[in-house]
Image (cartoon, rainbow, N blue to C red):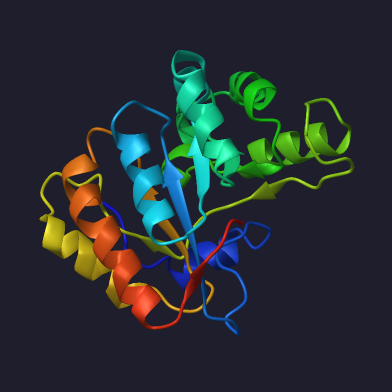
Length: 216
């Protein structure tokens, strides 16, 4: 079960997390979860390049380990990276110590101040532990004195949903996206049928409306 548009109640319960950016500018923040992997991530990179768009990739550490060349490519092409844990852990079902260590394993590879909890499910106790670890410089971060930003989303396209048609995925995305939206796609095999259809059409639709696509 998922909601395409993030509900107000969740934003109220997790006020310290980033759900969207300023609504004053015609900017969209595309994000991609679960890569990098062969075929799918390169497709995303090519499509973004076709529209002169930048995005943020929340990477699984184990996929970075398996595909370092693709990880290197996405950084070289000017995209941002975020931590998505090493093994795609669900925070609600994981002990805090285990979650923190898994975060650290991915952080060693990403060295970023951006984090997205897999499934969007994280305990408040885990948030505090990760924020404290970053602020105390326990984990590597490329930018000195960087404050951890836990990024959720404004719009989730549902591209991972096997029961959703590619056209429905596209309609989900354009119907709910507006100024400052943080939009979630997935560079994964499971999502590829819907991603391949929806992403170029999404980019074309909002490019025609004068939007820019930037990193977080």
